[in-house]
Image 1 (cartoon, one colour):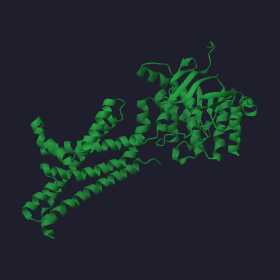
Image 2 (cartoon, helix red, strand yellow):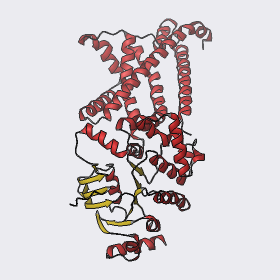
Image 3 (cartoon, one colour):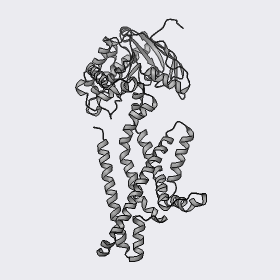
Length: 256
Length: 215
């Protein structure tokens, strides 16, 4: 075990659903400001790994650390709830299916959590909502309900909602997989913007081009293990492992 | 058809209709309370509470409401429960419809996509906050119509309390048949009044449902 402190550190992550081992001893470190992509076919465990970082899918074994604090430490139930809620406030998450709150306006989607958890005033909430929606180019839809938005617009609002909590780390779980092809780009643009602002991000994606263009490092996962890890130039252009090459070849064929 | 007779007795039926309305309102309130508690029990993380909730639902739904009323009203005094007919009617019917409402409420809550809860939890909301701010407001909207169906059944179900001599619409019809020998007119009169009550309730439910609908 190294002594130096990483911003995000996953040590020996293991996860089983019944007899199915989804994660088999995974290690991952991410430094502040880094953007890490995770690729692999469905069922490879990449989403499970991402969801373990904020304990949405608790690990069966191993540790998750964020900024010097263990996320999944063992505590009595009540204390753990408190601890995990505080941890999650620091980690934004964006889902494949957006999961916007359909009963709330765009404004309230963005401000609900900050109002509830940080006790900000209505004026501050309004400023925050405008600021965050401006950032993702959705300010003009501030009074709309989610059902009135396109998929790409929903996802941009979902990103604004996550950013409104001022997270240290953003997790993207196939953020563009449910979108029509012509709507993917607007979401990618927002993510690129975050990258330029040096937001630390972990991105699970099926979009190799996007991963190649924004990520500092890419992990290829298969059957619960990290097969290969490295800079995108190496992973996409000149991978070492046979399995990585096969996956990428299939993926390109599939996309063509 | 003896319209003249109907015109003469209908004020008494209106009075009886008011009793039916009172029964319906009180039963609805008690039913919703039992339904909310029942649903909370069935969704609890404590196995014992889940068992209690499930037992309540299957016992109540597995036996006739009339038998439940008889046990309460006629059997009650034997075990020290003294209720007048109206009280027994409200409690019996309320606890009965509460079992059906338990399932309605529970169903509406579990119908809310788990992604909603996850999104709320990832923002840092506690379980209770996520339930109050995200799951419940959406579940409320879902449950209005099916609760309306429960209430519709409950209003018609109030006819059962005639059997324990509560002077409501059905009992009143029977009483006037005793003196007039005109069952067609008397039951028709009470039937029409039931329908008016149910139609009015239906309109209220539709209005609520429309008002609660998300854009």
